[in-house]
Length: 211
Image 1 (cartoon, helix red, strand yellow):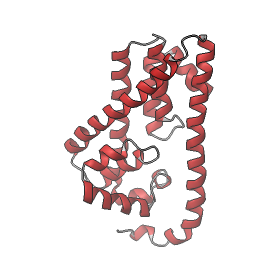
Image 2 (image 1 turned 135 degrees about the horizontal axis):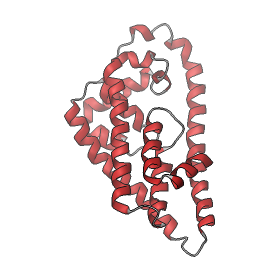
Image 3 (image 1 turned 90 degrees about the vertical axis):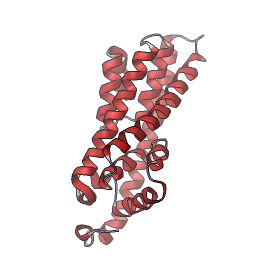
């Protein structure tokens, strides 16, 4: 993940924005690590608080909209799509459908704050044809909470290291990024193992899938 830090440090605003968009479409750039990095850059005065906040906030909303659009385009067939069936499987889609039926737009507000459920929640909102206006308004509020929390954590965490050199602070940041990456990697391994177990049960029923 050294390339993540290099990109963000050299082109801070563009780097933060592009990494968030790339992460939303499947590249290995964890959203939380990028937001923590934003807080770090603010603490070091490498970027200005308001422009940086607006950049990452906009990047997250656009990324969520991209995922939502894929769900809306493919509908339930998304669980058979070679790219998105790795993200959401039939049982999870059914579970999210029940959650949306019970909580409505509140599902977006809650799901956006949970690591590992965010992308699934956004794609499910598209599959279930949540009105675009409702989705954007709810996601805008939910994303504001996410950005505020994570950027603040990155800022306050690195502010506590003001007596250390920039090199030491970068090392701490890299550790945070690596931990976040490790978390996503473990989740990927578990998901892959689960898919192998479920594949025999799903391959016959998946084309006729219905909740």
